[in-house]
Length: 283
Image (tube, rainbow, N blue to C red; front, side, top):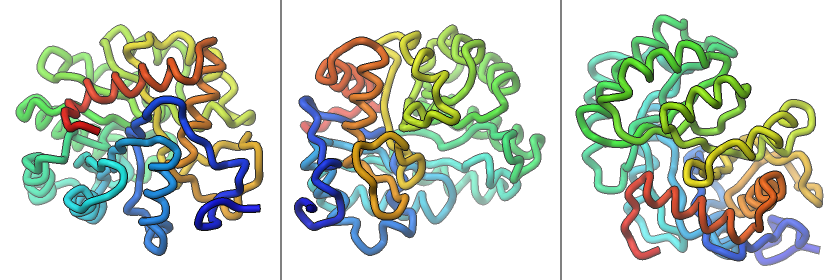
């Protein structure tokens, strides 16, 4: 039994009791090429009113910005930066390319940028060099930072600490680290993004306790789709592609971990996202 266009089982057709904003969606990923309109319709039915598309390299920045210029049932915004996996490609030409898109009216943040020592697809030294340039861009443009960090908490905290007085708001998107690293970010008044990672009993169980330590006015939620499909969904989904319409499930799980209602968490995280990205449109 399916609902609507038949892509989601009825048991996965959630609707948030309050509007939601997905702060991290990779909708320019090739898996969305064939049905993006339907994906956005499902997101609207789930009561998502806005989402921020993640710009991680030249192609995704360009494609994300183009999507924000079109009419959709959900308001679309974007970020512009270079993911640390690609840091070895960073040069003056790419920096000028990113800076050009930071002038775009619907590109709201610098990033995705940061450090990822888990796989080291780029060397740590290249990652730090590229990240330093993003920190400088954020300080100069006064745009917020959309940050990525995995297994690099010490270096990330050190670099952010050196720039903290110069940069504005910053969010550690898809935080998956330990308590010490989380508290380090919170001590710097950073925002923290949470995904379906905490729905994964294999590697995210520690987050179900830690998420309660994030101040209510510092928490935002995201899918990071098509990645990080929650493992505890109440029905099996054909394929493994995550999508924004499943954000209400993540909201529900985080609310349960924090001991608050789903509606309260939705209201708070949406308010936080609007303030962080300076979203003033009537959505």
